[in-house]
Image (cartoon, rainbow, N blue to C red; front, side, top):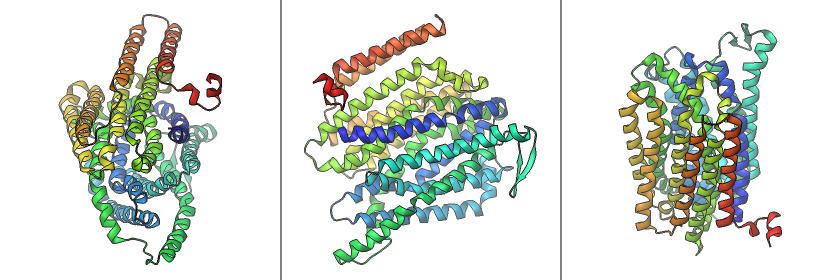
Length: 511
C-alpha cells in the first residue's frame, strides 16, 4: 500500500499539476473563441475521435505488455519489441489510409473545407500510439520520475506555444495582423482552430525523441538476453505476438467500448442534434464545462498508472484479495473528497470559463459522478484480467456503451447536452454493476461495502447541503460553509479509516 501511495503521488502530482496547468488553455480558448462561433465545438468533436483512434491503434498492448512482461517464461525484452512492432505497423497502415482517403473522411466528418484538421490530428494520434508502449515501459521499470517529467514537458510546451500564438503575438504585431511564418500563412484576425491542432502536433513530435534512450537500451538488453539464454534474437517474435494478440483483442473491444463511453456523446451530438448550425455551439459549451469535471478522470488515471503494474506483480501473493479490497475503498474515499472539493468551490472554478460557456456548469457534478463510476469499474476490472478472461470486460463495456449511446440518441434532441451527462452515468453504472455481480461469482473479493456505502451517503448528504446553499447566501459565505462541510468529511475519514500512524513524518506524532 505504501508503494502504491508513493507511485500514485508521483503519477498523481504530474497528472494533477499537469491538468491544472492545462486548465490555462480552457480559459484561453473559451475567451478567444466565443461559444457562438462553434470553434470550441470543433475542437471537442475532433479530440473525441482522436481518443477513440488511440485506443484502436494501441490495440490493448499497454495492459498486454504488463501481463506478458511479468509472466514466467516470457522474455520481457522481446515483449517490448513485439509490442512496438505491432503498434508501429498498425500506425503506419492508419496514416497511409488517412492520406489516401482524406477527401471522403473530411466530407463524412463535416470538415470538407478543413482537410488539414484531419491530417494534423491523424499525425498526433499516430505519434501518441507509438509513445504508449515506451510510457508503459517506464511504468514497468518503476521510472515514475521520467514518466512524470515527460508528461509535464509536453504540457508546458503546449501551454507556452498556445500563449505565444494567442496572447503574445497579437500583443506584439497586432490582433488583426496577417504574416508568413516559414511556409505557413498565419492570420491573427481570427482565433485559429487549426493552430490548436498544429501546436499539439509540434509538442507531440518533440516528446517522441526523448524515448530514443529506451529504444536503444532495450535493443542492447534484448541481444544480451538472447546471447545468455542461447535463443535467437528477434525484433518481433510472431509466436509471442499470437499469444499477445489472443490476450489483447478482448481488451481492445473493452477499450473501444470504454472510450466510447467517454467520447460517443461528443461524436454523436452534431449528428443527432436537430439544429445543425447550433450543434457546434452547444457542444462547445458542454466540452468546456466537462473540462472542469475532468479532475475525476485525472485521479483515476493517476491511480491506474500506479495500480496496474502492482496488481499484476502482486498476483502471486496470498493476500492479494485483501489488498485489492483496501485499494478500492481508499480510491473511493479520495475521489469522493475530490468531488466535494470541486462542487464546494464551483463559484471560483466557473471563472475558468469564458462567460458565454458558464450556462453549462450544471453538468459538472453529473459528469463527475459518471467518472467516479468509471474509476470503480476500472478497480473491479482486474478479476478478469488476472484469470486471463478479458472477454468479460469487453461484454461489460459494450453493454455500458450501448446504454450510453441509446440515452444520447433518444434524449439529445430534447435535452441537449444534459442528455450527454446523464448518459455517462447510465453507461458507467451499467458496466460497474455487471462487473461487480459477475466478478463476485467468478473471482470473489470481499469489498467493505458497508464502509463504502457510509462514505457515499455522507458525500451525497453534504452535496445536497452545498446545493441548497447556492443562491441563498452571499458567495463568500457559501464558500466558507462549503469549506466547513469538506473539513467535516475529512474528519470522518480520519476518525474511521485514515491510518495516520503509518504515514511518514506525520505518523510519528501519533505513535
